[in-house]
Amino acid sequence: MDKTYRLSKDEIRPLVRNYGGCIATDTITIDGYPVRFMYREDPDNPLDSGWRFLSGFESDDYMEDPENSGIFDVNTIANYDPSIIPLLDSPVGSVFERTGEQERFVRVTDWEPSDDDEE
Image (cartoon, rainbow, N blue to C red):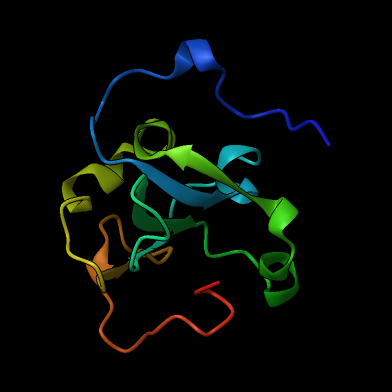
């Protein structure tokens, strides 16, 4: 299935460099929702940053379908939502959330990815 992304390749500017790849959901890259939940896990390979970006509106069923996410350069997701940039140097295990009432991300200390998230 071909996806139509909210930003074209020509609209992606070099905002951050050398972070590697990440996973982001289609709610961000296609539907245009901002990043509202982000976490960093152990990278899957040498090109993976370990960052995972979600809008916070994804259901469990949505997350179980790999077609609803994609692998991107971290710079691409920074173009979708530049507010993630100050947090990108955070270590593995970092989790941040932004709720509707919050303009900025806050650190989450009581969340761990499920076994399904780590696959």
